[in-house]
Amino acid sequence: MATTEKVYIGIDNERVELTGADLTAFKAQRALDKAAHDALKAEADAKAAARESALAKLADLGLTEAEIAAL
Amino acid sequence: MATTTPNYGWPVPTSTDYVKDGATAIEALGDAIDATVFGLGSTGLTLINTTTFSAVASQAVNNVFSATYDDYRIMLDITTGTSDAIVYMKMRTGGIDNSLLYYYAFPGFTSANAANNSNSFNVITGWDLIEIDSATSDLYSFNGDIMKPFLAKPTKLIGQKASTTPTGTPYAQSGSAVHNVSTSFPSFNLIASAGNISGTVKVYGYRK
Image: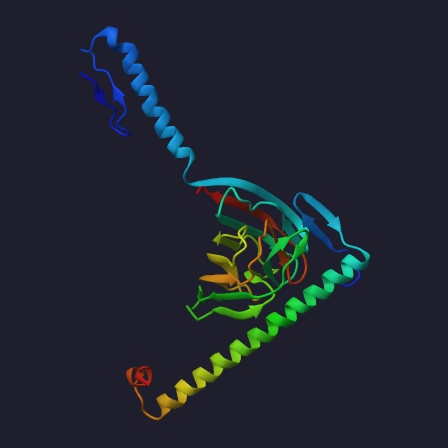
């Protein structure tokens, strides 16, 4: 959404344009939500990648899937 | 001799019963039907609210949770999003969204290759309900039970979602979530992380 585009929110059955301080607060909270989500997602993705890498290295050492699972 | 109906077992007279007993038979039948219908009204789901929204950055659904019900079903259907985005759900009271202490674990798979596509978040600002690809439409639904939002206890969410990745690959997730805040919430808000969304959300109450 372009910064100049108007922002509308729904409140029950009404559609309301956000302006002034309400618009500023909405954008700030949206940015906070996105930052929090992106940070946690990156952390989770990094953990998953590290696990996949570790499993691959164990397999390269000759361990079977059952042996890796038993660790 | 009176007999009973095949499905609900309501008492009905037979053709050999005396006509003089007809009033009593009708009374017995009426009482049985009354008891059955009354019972149907005290169980199951009751539609509380349907909200249809179009081209909004967020959609608040106010005052749908109350002391009438403890547990609820939410059926969210997103038709379109103008940006690749995530739709968050936040609990809400007094017109203010609560952004604290949401926990979330939804294991899942993509449809294309059964690759793992799971999300789990520890202490985040809202629940991720649906992920949207702006290039596709009508692929996004969340269907779940929200437990005890109106009680001043943590709220739980258990459900399933149909979503797509930002590149349009469909995926499914099923899981549960907690909002670990012991506050009564009569309302909730659906917030797109970017752009606008259109769709419908229905709230049902589970009769106690």
